[in-house]
Image (cartoon, rainbow, N blue to C red; front, top):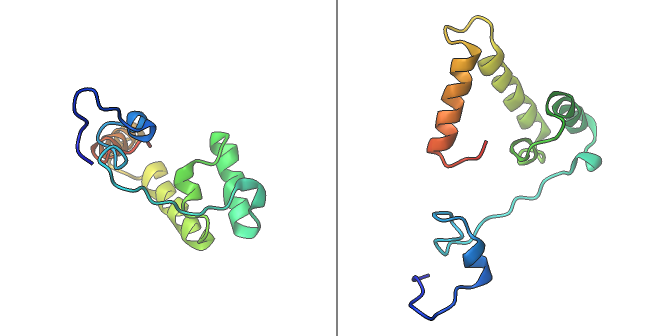
Length: 110
């Protein structure tokens, strides 16, 4: 969508879109169905309970994988091995800083 000319009004959606985001560039944004914590059962419920104990909430980065609990389980175990390993040449702080830099480079708020 081209920028507005003087005197022309932007739609509320464009005014509220973050500069540089897909919405502000006129692209559509995808939607992925997820399983809410109160609807989770089995393995997914266990993963969500662990997330609640660890962080006090279930972040969207976990919910986005909720339709595939086994994949989510493998993903969270991989994250634990990478970020919490005690035999890494990097300190936990260094790994967190790298994760933060990558998230920033990817324009990801996580």
